[in-house]
Image (tube, rainbow, N blue to C red; front, side, top):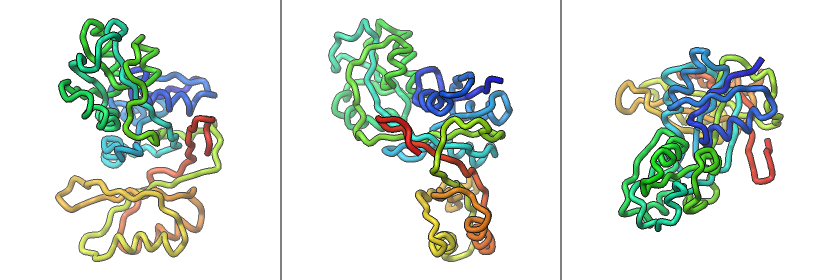
Length: 292
């Protein structure tokens, strides 16, 4: 039976590229949705089997909308992670391919894509209007639908092909080591293995007790003396007043029966609350293929 995969659309986004890389060996149907909340709600309400959304970019940091929706709105577990190298391109309609960069009046793209090309935009488009869209593919679609306008989009090579656009300038991102983490969420385990991996992460959400000086230090110490490696710690507002935060922690190992439960028990004894957001395999796509 074909599985339904929701991704941030329309067709031609990096999220679609990540989804197709993850599930390329399986019989699935890919369904684009307009926004990250729409993607996650589709999986939460069982309109689809799995949701694929961006989580973090190596240049611009975390995608806060994804984090906040996972924390506050849904309780779907993270099932796997896929890291994709990101290359941004300046796309125009074929009818506008001969115009100069100085003649481009508008540049459309997703806020993350625009931020990843900030230097290029600052030096090239001081005269142009920058317009944010829900995705890079939506920006490409806007250019396709207005071929007579001197407009450009920042987007993917896949979007160029899908929307029959032309490259005005390739690889315009400010930093070449540009990667984005994408995650798959769903309420059913990935019984079919889209990829094989020997690398795992566990992500948790920690709520500190009030009026406990040094609580965060004690939380980190519970991992440190057990020699458990943490790859990321980040705070997000609880939305219950200034100064109140959740802490998202990435642990560089799979959930086990002894080590992590022991650390969690020690942390909960401090009065903290822990929610496991997922324990899952992760993969990194390189120029030579996929590594775990």
